[in-house]
Length: 278
Image (cartoon, rainbow, N blue to C red; front, side, top):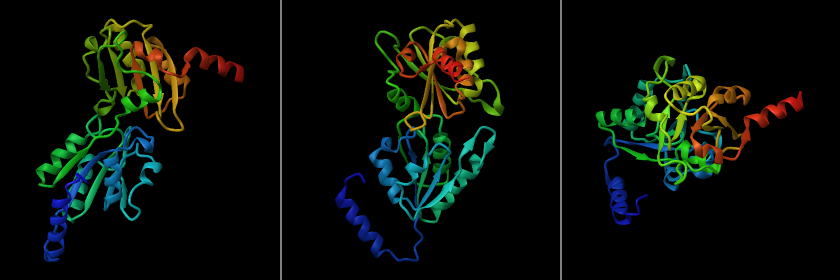
C-alpha cells in the first residue's frame, strides 16, 4: 500500500517459502470511517477495508460504508450508545488482540477519526502492550465533515481565530468537567461532540461564564448523510433547538459566530412551519 514494490515482492516470496506450520502474527488497523458519507472515506481506508479478514465496527458506521468492504470479511458489531454498550471496551480490545494473534488482518472501523473521541488511543495502548503490530489511518472527523457539508467555516479571520473540540459526555452520565471560562472566550468556535443530552447544561454554563446569550449556534444531526438536519439559533435556546428539532443524534453542537454562516433552518422558522402544519 505504501508503493514499495521491491519490498512487497520480497515479502511475498518469503511468505510463500515459509513453512506453513509457522504461526503468523496478524495486524490491526485503527481506521476512521469519516462522518457518514461513504465518499468521504480516504483511499487508504478503502484499501484496508477491501483487504481485511475481520472488521470490528461501531454504531456510527453506515451500511453504505460496510458495503465497500471485502465481501467475505468477518464483520462484528461492537457499537456503543448512551448507557447501552453492545461490547465493553476491554472486550473489544481483547478481541482485536485475539484475532490478530490468529494471523488476521483486522480493521477496527470507527466513525469520524479514531483519535478524536473515538477511544483509539486506549485501543492502540492495549495492542502495543500485547505486542500486536498496529497502525492508524485517520478519518475526516465529524466536525470538519459536517461543517463543510453545512457550508460553515470553523475558523474565519473576521469571526473566529480558534476552534476547540470538546465532548459533552462524561462518565456515569455526569456533567462534563470543562474549563467553561476559557470556552466562553470571544473569537472562538466551540464544537461539542455527544452533547445533545446536555444541551441545556452546556448553554447555561457558557452563559454563566460570560458568553453572550445571543451567540449563534448550529445543531447538525447526521451530517453529510441523506438524513442530515441543520437547525440554527441562539445559545440561550440551545436546549429548545434540540427538543423542537427532534434531535436524537448523532449530532454536533457548533457554538460561535461562524454558526450563523451555516445553511439550515432557523429555530423561529421551524416553529412557524410547525404552526402552519398544526
